[in-house]
Length: 116
Image (cartoon, rainbow, N blue to C red; front, side):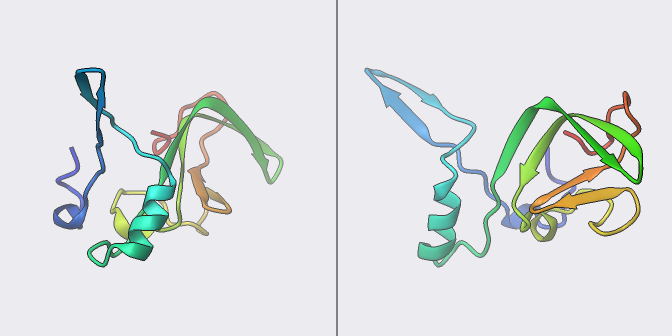
């Protein structure tokens, strides 16, 4: 699913196997502090990025125009150097950057092209 990414060969996703009373399952996420720990304590980890789904609806306003975002993500700033998704770079027209969050600016009622 991510082979288009320029850095795909260097990207890894942590998927812990959890044993629970004789049955096991593989989770598709980990605890956020693992990224901080791995980057600091594991020499092989050059960078790390945490991603958090926001399944809600986000409303915001810019220059008097109101926008709605459906299902977007909060990401660490390292996202922009680790992944090569075709996003509008932060700071250019059409993107709102708040702390570690960048969003495309789709008009209210229209889903954003980079909201998932």
